[in-house]
Length: 79
Image 1 (cartoon, rainbow, N blue to C red):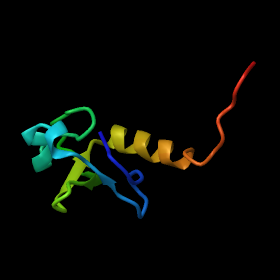
Image 2 (image 1 turned 60 degrees about the horizontal axis):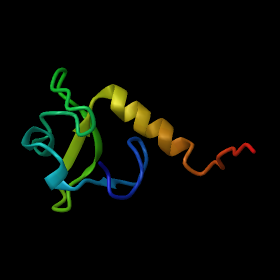
Image 3 (image 1 turned 30 degrees about the horizontal axis):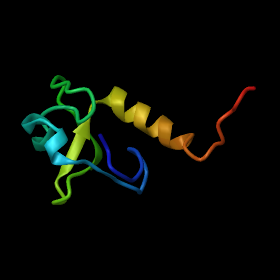
Image 4 (image 1 turned 90 degrees about the vertical axis):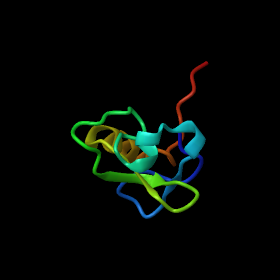
């Protein structure tokens, strides 16, 4: 999972821990979130500490972008 940053379609970048990803995820051959290999992930989700990009499928990239869009909003609490 991401260590820091923001989601796809922003100027901020998630930094992924390579030891938590499979070889296919590190090489960009599988989604860094859900492991999907087909269709090949094309959306950059973040990077590894060495600067290599990791990619995500369209669905996971959309979820990450939506999460980032709501990250600054306060959460509701009920009593």
